[in-house]
Image 1 (spheres, rainbow over the protein chains, first blue to last red):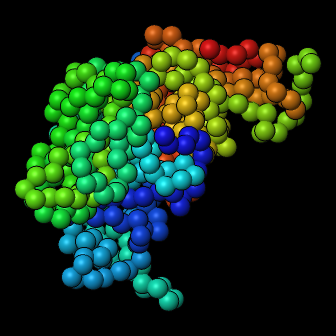
Image 2 (cartoon, rainbow over the protein chains, first blue to last red):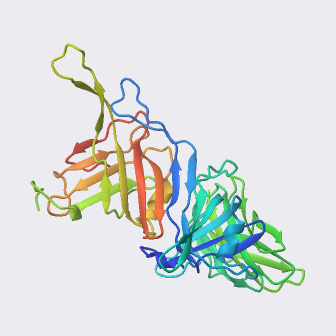
Length: 259
Length: 155
């Protein structure tokens, strides 16, 4: 179970990808910038109001700029290769915040899909660094107003389906407002992997959370899947994995945002 | 100890805001700006006036806070703010200034008691993981009564 409380930056991780790639940027990222949600509003005042007031409208999610150490390997695809290839493309991001430990099950995370606006090299006194900017996203196709969720599976390899009941996310209670999952698959040795979420009312008996699945994925990639905004999500969540077609290992990160 | 008067320091200042369930929570802050009403200034002078003058119109109140990112259950800054950002439900908000000791009734407060019609909204919530801090902005709900200075807690 994740620690709670205050922390420092060295326990933050950034996982990213799109339909054609999934990668861990944490080994080269030096700073991520603000992880934000801001709601549009106009300050209004009727004649007899004693103070100007607001009603909050559509949110904007934002992240970055992400500053990284320049690191290149065209064969193995290091940070430069990934970010240079992603210019102009929509990236799925998970920024996981560990509290005095690396992010783990139930750690707080910020997730979303952002258009990568730029990627530029910066030559310092000794080291070359890079800066990547993402366009603040007005999530027109997203049915939810919060980018804050919990890590259901920290980036790591699994070789079989999950039958455990200890590495779970406990929300304290069930909800009936849906949610969405975000996944990043960084390695798959063969075949396909299906990344999904199980839920449970008692923390002992789990079953598949309807609709909370990546579907069969045949290569490293990342994505976001939304549930109905009225879907019931029971109290406890755990990751689930199905390997097929000769796959024996998948390395992935998984997050869930409740509605 | 009885309520005190005079000057003080910020370590006796507490920031309270409703969580998403309507429970007033004291969350960790290390910076608070915009505590008070800021009246809109309208120039109202004429050529033949001896000196330019203004009148004051409807005030606004925008409170910006920042502090450490904190995921402590129930009272952590992230726990509370991530749950109220964007809600159009008026929130109680209270800033209590203890005068050289823990605040008690009779010492200054600024805020508003939350009702279905009165309160603040959390307009934005940003976390900077690079220094593990947050910033949040609160604005007044449309049609709400004005927040006020008082010497009693707002709930």
